[in-house]
Amino acid sequence: MRPDGGDDERRRAKTFTATLVSLVAAAVLVSVLVTPAAAVVVSRLGFHFPFSRIFDRVAMAAIGAALLWQRRRLKLGARLERGFARPRLNFAKMLRGLIAGIAGVAMLWLLAALQSPPKMVGLRGLVLHAPAALATGLAVGVIEEGFFRAFLLDGLQQEFGAAPALVASAAVYAAAHLVRPQARAQISRLDMGAGLRNLEGALRGLMALRALAGFIGLFLLGLVLGLAFQRTRTAYFSTGFHAGLVFAAKSWRYAALAPENVARWIGGYGWPPLVSGAAAWVMLTAVLLLLGPLSGTPRRRQSS
Image (cartoon, rainbow, N blue to C red; front, side, top):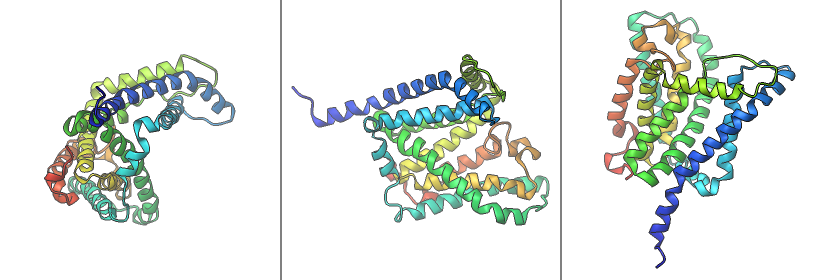
């Protein structure tokens, strides 16, 4: 007896995680092998970039190429189109998210200001750089929400269900931002072991105790962004919230309140700044609990 359409759909859905994991593993392997030669070429062209930075760019390009290669099997285009459907009708959701993100960082700024009154040393600079900071925030928001929510979370929840997919995607989101090698060395001669050492250093940093604070904050942020995607069924609110956080965080220095110059529970205990601090954890937990009113969606609309 031939399986019905529902069985076929479930079988296809179960290939998402296996396919994605194998593609990412293959892309990382390619990066380990290719980056040493790429670094030598970059050096001979007169550029002086750390090996780790070149490795990151090669890995991103390899993963992007792998996703495009298997875009039909992973339903990449369909997921992105669904996540960013009807932009005009959903502009208000993005605006709500943007305001919420800026307000969240503003609360941290007020805490820091109460602790140590700031000097508005760069108001003119803030005005001049605000458009660029906003553009950066929007670019980061669209790219990361497109991948982690519209693509990854959507694929995982089709296979595992809403709650497990939300937790898994938040953990992947946090870990991806913490895979940062500590060494900033440059290489000008071919060293085929450099890629493997770079990857080992990045994974060692991820597993270090000092990464725990950053993981907690990024995981909470991933839960907020993921639940917003599930509640609204689009990536607009999460993109706006993400962009608002980036924009507001970049504005701290114009008030002479760099995260590293305030109490660690406000500025952060490590990488990344702000979100790795206890104050940000409380703020993100509050946003998580108030996500329905903030996003304008009732609880019953959460995806199953």
